Image (cartoon, rainbow, N blue to C red; front, top):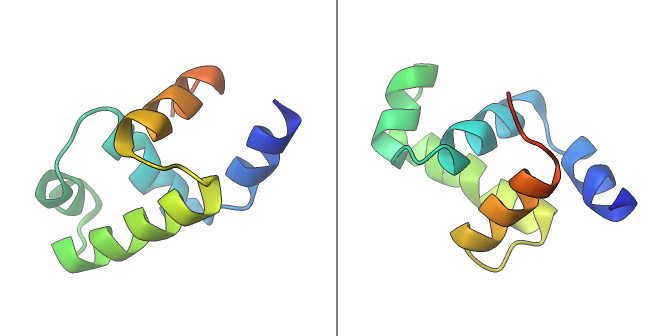
Length: 72
């Protein structure tokens, strides 16, 4: 659990925002609209989130968020 918390802490503020919206079920286009950024930028942030969190898939990331009691 500590390693998971450390990985989450390594995310930038924007990456944490993207992670919160992605795990809530929004599409990249919707995340971009919510944050006022381009969809391509969302994809870049999402890729960084997946890499830094060491998530193999979106369901894996959602499970990690659940373990972190993610409510951003």
